[in-house]
Image 1 (cartoon, rainbow, N blue to C red):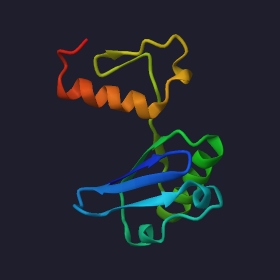
Image 2 (cartoon, helix red, strand yellow):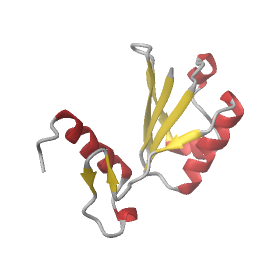
Image 3 (cartoon, rainbow, N blue to C red):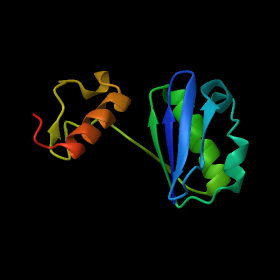
Length: 115
């Protein structure tokens, strides 16, 4: 099972793939303070994937907490110049939010004819 996390500036969402209905939300401020959702104590993921637009400190806090709780690294999504048949139009990929990049990849996955 894969724990997926979407971190925004003030709130985040999470779900456990493979377990219908196992999902929730979290406060980015709590995460920054090292507080993971208490529901995670009952989870047993094999992987942890995250999209983070909340900044490096929040990403580091998530990585530290996940490493401590599950002994797993967090696989952070990144914007690439090319991925899955999509080319990023930004010269500086760091200027595109990873949440938007993932949305474009998902849309392309649903209909690769779009250009």
